[in-house]
Amino acid sequence: MRAELFHPDRGEISLNKVLHALSDPIRRDIARTLYEGGPMVCGRLSYPIAKSTLSHHLKVLRESGLMATEIRGTSRVISLRRTDIDLRFPGLLDAVQVTAPAPEDAGAAGRLAAPQREMASARG
Amino acid sequence: MRAELFHPDRGEISLNKVLHALSDPIRRDIARTLYEGGPMVCGRLSYPIAKSTLSHHLKVLRESGLMATEIRGTSRVISLRRTDIDLRFPGLLDAVQVTAPAPEDAGAAGRLAAPQREMASARG
DNA sequence: CCTCAAGTTCGCAAGTTGTCGAACTTGAGT
DNA sequence: ACTCAAGTTCGACAACTTGCGAACTTGAGG
Image (tube, rainbow over the protein chains, first blue to last red):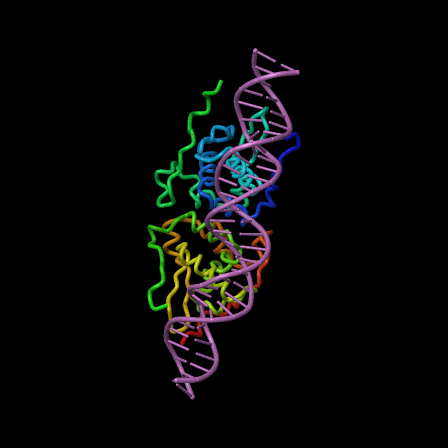
């Protein structure tokens, strides 16, 4: 954990990997949550999956170039690489509904357990 | 083959399936070819894969809702469901570069064998 | 009916993915 | 130093994917 985590350069972000990352509903929901709520500690995400599985999804998102991870003590702050994605694949985040306000409108894609979307504050 | 092939209704097209379908470079290239060249007999597509594999990709594209297949004698005419996709997921085809002119500009995604892009005309 | 052409479907092999639990690492607090 | 909290990594496993060739189905034509 000491070494910096791998993040592809903007120019190296591959559409294949990005689309693959976004084709999983949990990962797309994470991206949407980051779009809505901005950077957050990854522990705030709560899905009905094991910690190791979540960790795997976050790794896929990070290595695809969609997400950045910054180490903050024992936590990690994750954020959407919005500018990079917008520059490299204009309109993509809109088109895949990462910018949609809430899952209620997402259609027949299937509902997920909502992550705790609190106003970024409560946490001593 | 007598029965009509399954095509999801426009409203039933799932973003998950569409993104999954598009995350394969061959399938995305097929979609781009259909966008450029319009409807065509699927035998005109030529990729360095077996017929059965191509058939599988076409099935994934059709069942995702991206493509339509019409039976014409022993052949099948495939086409991009452009209007349906544009209405359901505006901007998606642009964002995933299905509307890009040629693979030469696609970036680091990897090059594929080009399908025979003839002017769509010969069609008894 | 026989044959050809166009695709699909059926195994099958090899690789990838999503998932879990258990063990591990790292930083913070006591 | 000990313990707790936050995540990662490892090994396993079932399900799925991509790929192939062989066999099959269907329509067209002699």
